[in-house]
Image (cartoon, rainbow, N blue to C red; front, side, top):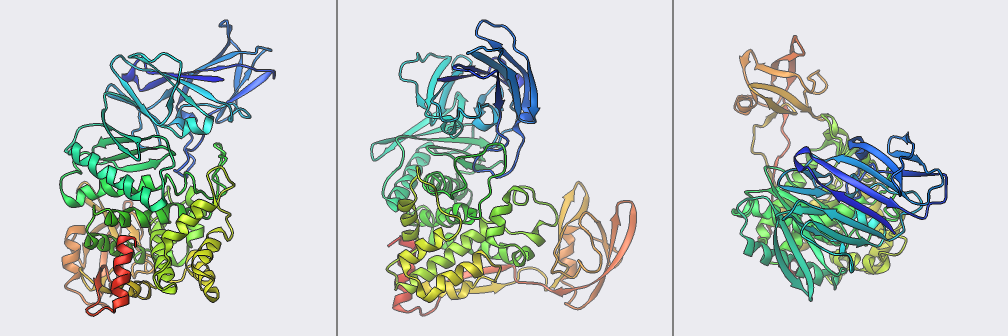
Length: 581
């Protein structure tokens, strides 16, 4: 059994101390590799850059020579030793859900950032020893070691293999522990940081989310579950794991309805991943190659379907008003329609290129790409509506997710990239003379405009588009840097793009009068589409003037409203959709 020990003897230095005891070695050399990415966050992050003071020695302490053979690999000459001890430090001062953080208040580590592995030995059972400052406790999804002594500063856990070790992040410190059970299965919320959370309400609502999702899928697929919740200053995000999650949210998010929804939606989203991606997964996403990109065209299902259900299940749980849910759906529709990139990048392409596009946006991203979260959410909505309409309300996308979960167990090969999801849809709803195949070709593999109106008519909703801002439009967005205003993005479908306004130009004046992003809307309201205005800009140190012919502004506001006189079938479909009937 490989034994990992992680300690934090000087938390203020942000340095974790790692020791790995290897046994059973027979080769003259052994490689130690640190992952370059962490599952659930599809970008190469080069965690090896934070490793320092690497050493290797025999069991009696004799130093062994080593060298770097790759950016992420330390090659040790064992000299025939059967047992080798590896030691190194990892700098951890990045408080996100996908990285690690250590200071005087706590230690949080995501396994991919700290634990090296031996190629060829990732299927072995492991032991993890955690040494903490006195008085600190440990919260994790790992199973406590059945025989190792547990003390105030020494904590021992086991993992079935390296994948499980990496899939169980750890929180060490003086976090507050809140507990509840569902179906006699223990759940724990480990709360780090201060804020305005009502802890009793937090437990009640989180439990309700678990119960609602248990009912959706039929059972809880774990023996225990840990919510690691960081209350931070303005940061947010979540990263799913098989029986735990790390969530971060602004510390003042818990009192008003709109801000509290962020906690509820984040919790619902990451918990849904327990089924959708941690067990029901695209075939390429396991076993993991931790050194290189792992490509799949199905992130639109893994993240898009999860985004579709996160708030819908809050409605079904009674934790979000239907009106608020419809507002959020409308906001996502507006967001997608304001991305020219929807004409260029399909959902499948967005999924495949997550490694180079989604996590690395720039000023041109809106013109060339879309989010598989946002469009995936909306395509799942349309698919759900089509199934409900085609089957007279007897089946839905709910049934497709449940069928996929039954058809592709966690220990199986995963969902095939080509045709696996379509086959499940047709098994649930019938082939429909090829209508679902056409749906996948148009909206998932293709870039056709989404038919929101046709889909939502199924549940008696209509779309009411409007414009809040000026009717005249430049096609620009701006960013503020101190007292200066710069062009943030230039939309490819806007009038400023072809005439030579660039991202990062500094905005000075409109028709000779000083203007910034706050005044620009009021000034543009004085013009009509078709008028020509002069923008005065700094491009670097050069003063330039660009004439722009203003265009008709696209709609930027959408209301999803119930039809005045929906049919009985539409009214029933609306209730079934929101109640999960």
